[in-house]
Image: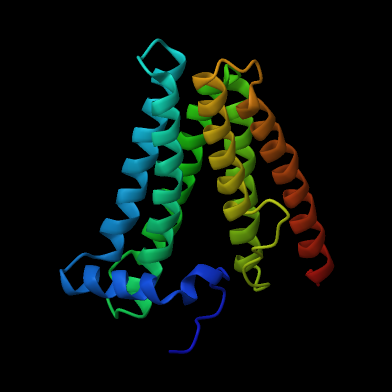
Length: 210
């Protein structure tokens, strides 16, 4: 099937097992919109787990690991909803809304949760705002007829990879009583990288403007 225009380029979309899973979901009547909403559920669970890890829940390192798994689960939902919709022929009413709005909610929940877990809530909120702003720039550029700009260096996949690494690292440091708040370091990397991404997208948008 011809690749739709302005679709986020993902190497993982070419994996055979991903398409097998998407076909199984489609065959069981799972809709793309349901998959998108599942991503919000995972983000909400992860936010709660990260809050709990910072507020006295037993075995805090385990909650951080589960939160990292939720991050990857969110990415899987983001991948599968599009495949089920396009390759599976299950495009639903409001699909574009369900494709975009949940992502913004998920970014906010994941990074605010990471702010709690790291002990720097304002840093988590900063990452969330920057993530939403870069997505706004992408959508705004598309509304101007310039196409979707998925360029980095810290687009969604990179942000989620850094967050996953930060959560796993924080879990290891917590388990072995290592005095390094690696999650804070990860959030700073996300904040700086996302700010640079926003500036570069603005520059590209300006160069294309009439």
